[in-house]
Image (cartoon, rainbow, N blue to C red; front, side, top):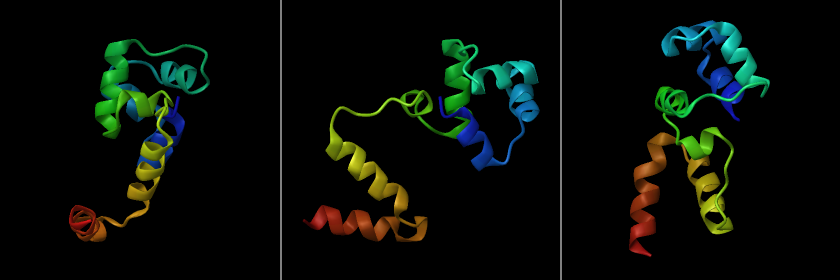
Length: 92
């Protein structure tokens, strides 16, 4: 699961996430260390908190390499250039 990665990127502590999800800091630690897994409702809360899909959160990848490649390309585009990128793609 990508919880630790997402938490570090967001600058949140385990206790801050725990508070938002009404669980203990130890629970977050256990999830990050893959000792336990969150329930589906907790996965939904985590995905909403970090604005990612549950598939991304749990590390699933697409079976279609083209989709994975496109996602990597999109992630690399600065936000201010994103609209121009979409326009160019639509004109192809």
